[in-house]
Length: 316
Ligand SMILES: [Zn+2]
Image (tube, rainbow, N blue to C red):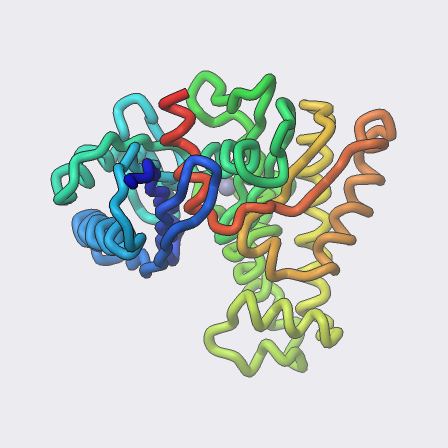
């Protein structure tokens, strides 16, 4: 018997997650490889191609590949398969679909989308938004991304930047963001944001347990905040406050019944971030949009599942 499967590939700033999955979201095999963006596009795509083949081989029975779904960070041109501008990878106008296709030993259609949109589709098909046609989606990882699904369709906007709430400045004199602005929401609540915050505030906190660490990691910041370290607490409380701002915008602009919060940072940061963000939302948005609003964590087992959803979306 041959099962038809999709391969999902989620390209992150530090790692690439790959999964072979069935059309109902069962992961049949998966792998994670480092991104190493500094090695250049060619090297990243080469590693991705070999990892895709390894994951397909590891399924262990005969499969037919319906397609490969790629979730790439930043602005993406899905029609032409181009990663237009991925700041965290240093990619501009990379013809990802064609580059990958040339390196793969197998022939399969390749669908490309922005990682946030892929995540939102994944939540709708397999995760926390199953059966929901309207919802907001925020993904807090290395950066902060936002998406929206209205009437079952991802909202792209005129230039594919709809719901890019991570790059709205809440402090135009604040820390410089890789996007060119200062004090973006992402510079407060994301891996990059909290690391930059610690670096900025550290001189004022010589007693902080983080002062002895080189380099400081997000995991160390979460742990220090749990132990009451004043610098880590300040940084995480500012992160929670900024996440509440992004939630308030999302809730007010869309007035959705559901917002899904995903991303590795969100998962690892613990209750302080979650609870603080909900308090921040309540003081910033109208009861009319907050009351009855359900906010849930992502239920996708892997971000690569969201990427695999792109394949089924194209076929439906
Ligand atoms: Zn920015």
